[in-house]
Amino acid sequence: MPAVTRVDPKSVFSAEEWRALTQRSSLRGCLLVLHAWGTIAAAIALVTWWPNILTWLIAVTVVGARQLGLAILMHEAAHGGLHSNQKINEWIGQWLCAVPVGADLASYRSYHLQHHKFTQQPEDPDLSLSAPFPVTKESFKRKAIRDLTGQTFVKQRLPLFLALFSRQRTTDSEDSHESFLSSGADKMMRFLAANAALFGVFWLAGAGIWYWAVWVFAMATWLPLVTRIRNIAEHACTSTSPDPFSQARTTLANPIERLFIAPYWVNYHAEHHLFMYLPCYRLPLAHRLLREKGLSGRMTVSDGYRDVLRLATSKA
Image 1 (tube, helix red, strand yellow):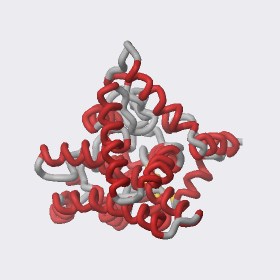
Image 2 (cartoon, rainbow, N blue to C red; image 1 turned 30 degrees about the horizontal axis):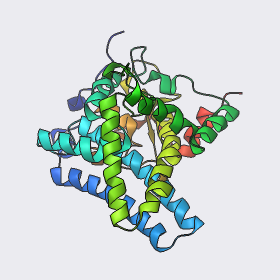
Image 3 (spheres, rainbow, N blue to C red; image 1 turned 60 degrees about the vertical axis):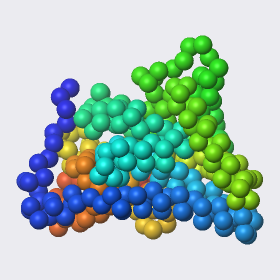
Image 4 (spheres, one colour; image 1 turned 180 degrees about the horizontal axis):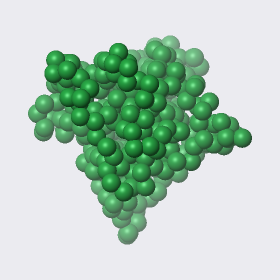
């Protein structure tokens, strides 16, 4: 099928508005990455200083959401949005965002741009993430239980780990599109090396136990669940019409949802698909301008993730 229709920003925004929307800040991009790791450090410090079931649950959910945040910032780097210097953008996106959570920037960029080119069409490599919806509540409950009990983590990560010991190594063309993970022995080696270094940092900080009890546990439980919810929110139960305004969803996340589910403005997915090279921190402005121009009526917009899940689980 042909590529999706692109919206000419000049037909929507004034020159002044477009300049404001496209203004990038390398400093702000770097600060977002620092914020992600700082939030992770603060959550670990909380449970280290006051270890109890409540602080542990807070730490696991916050860290799991920031692990997703690192993947989101890798996505920002894939669009060249973390730093104006391409080499710095690639290094930050790869080593500080992608590798610690088991992703690879170059592999991700390759298929993600295909997703933008063929959104919600048969050639879309992410179509399998949205096509099954809506499902029944029971079906989603089973999926959520698999996520929260680590079954999804084992299903996705164990084959990648076992590939290290297999004569038949996986290749880039076999990358997993279930989320942001990448296969290949070299990528798994980088993931393991980065996490060994991370464990060393935890251990030196006197928090070695929390590397396993929070960082790894969050990656095995909360991260798969919020990744699933994010995938559902972005395209499930949206229109397959040629109108590019309706092919992705914006979810009006509240502060709690942004903390535990949708960091770094990932909820403004419709705006991202319409103008994919806008910095993530300009997407709220894009949403406001589109609403003021009366164009939000053409968009798929949900009032929070509860509404998204209600729609995604509406099958009888």
